[in-house]
Image (cartoon, rainbow, N blue to C red):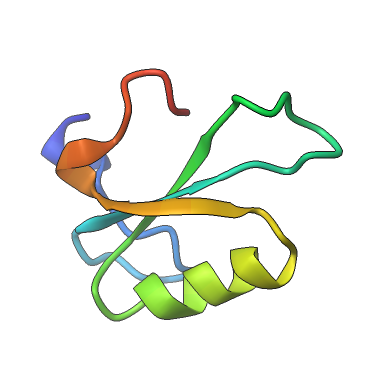
Length: 71
């Protein structure tokens, strides 16, 4: 990913993302599929909580460690 595409996924946030929240909706995706939400330090917990409450969050990793097959 280029630096320009590493913007936090939180609504109206334009900060550079430092975290990747890897998630999967089991009703829609195959078990091995990982979608990615990007998060700045400020929004990492709130975005993670949103996904966790729904049972979607699979992992939180630094943006440099986003798996090549995620997306």
